[in-house]
Image (cartoon, rainbow, N blue to C red; front, side, top):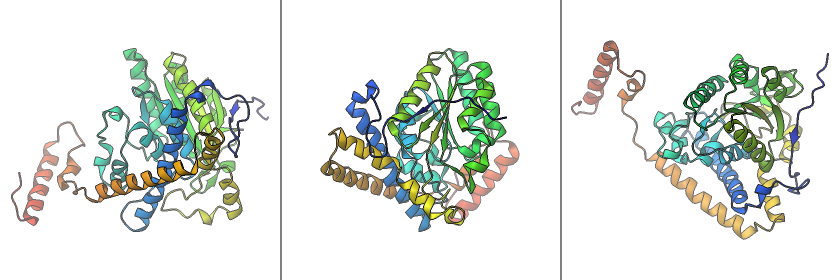
Length: 363
């Protein structure tokens, strides 16, 4: 039996940046439009540097956002400051838009947990990057439940990839969010590849958004290469949740133009023809062409932006490189509220050994 339920699909501008109809009223806010574009360009520049750093041994395994900049930029901009982001490992654009600093993201991917101790108070309650697949959806439901119990008009926004929608954690979270009418928005980045498994083999559902129906939630698709469409629908879902109308699922249809991570080689399972075809729909050029058509952007502004971004990325890299290593004993410091005696003893012994190696006294 085939499913015949048709879910909404939203696309506001085409690949050439031309409006496909009347645009939402909020698009009259030119500062907002430019903010979305600038963040997309910022994450692309930063992303390129991260890959280069990993290739030269200066960064650990890194998950690129190439081709998916519109999703994170739109999600981060649609959220209010009091909302909470529960991200996964491909959310660099969202974190940058929310206020996480570039050098902090570099620290995280460089293996330094201090990269999750953000300086900006605006993101103090956002969760750190989640690497286990789909467990962040469970965390989001817990946060949303706390908002409801406290009667706070706040929303939990969580993200994942297409592969995560096949995990029990994701499906159970949808079910709980539906039963409890939680203020949570699930955003799925369907970039067509769950590592080396294509979307066609990942799920037999007509769309990934259909998975919302079994939980009693509204589900919809949006063109993930159209930053305007993503922003519009995520904003609507967040406002709906804030108004007490419950959870939503938004599937953003995009394409992963790079490898799954820098530890992957996508050419082993993906054809060049497929990749070349996907580049024709990439989001940054589409938004740039839209801004040109609206007389909001030109080549001089583009060159100035690229120069500004180059300086910002270089400064972030230098700060990252100049950060002294964490104390060896830090490995013990964030496991327990009160360190058990056996671990306290190990911490003390490690401290003594490090002090001895350094030729100094331990505190």
